[in-house]
Length: 186
Image (cartoon, rainbow, N blue to C red; front, side):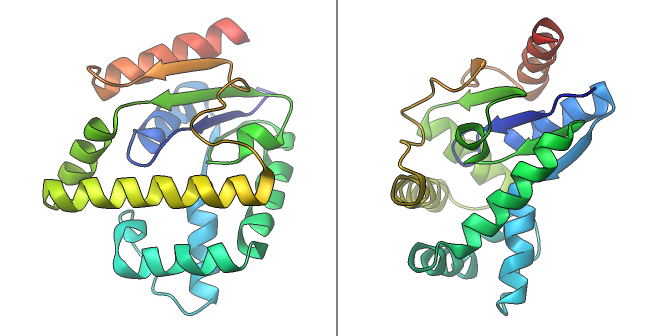
């Protein structure tokens, strides 16, 4: 496939699960923008290990550091843009859909309660912790991208080819909708 696909949405909405499902189905390379950002965090001395690292105290500390130095995000986004343009990729990213003009862009929407439930189950935390972390991450990232790129993350979804409401759907159902979307757009 010559096009790339980008999956975006709020924290804990299922982006990674859907992206990996699409990569497997269409024989594409999966890449997480968050993983690239974690590599940069490691370079800054953070112990950025594990899928749930963003939800830890250190992950939140790095997010605060990013608020004061946008170079982290700009470097990651420049790299993601280059990889996206090569084609044959499925990338999860908060920012990429607003930064590229081609490819297939899918937004996964879901209520904050639903995302909190996913995080609670996935990361083995209390519902209160999950709710607070997903809300804080969403709000901080939204403010960061508004300041950095002047788009309204979560509210301006006009750049997407497909919006999938993940509430009341299981992972398989969401992946199947995404697969059908990709087939239709190709």
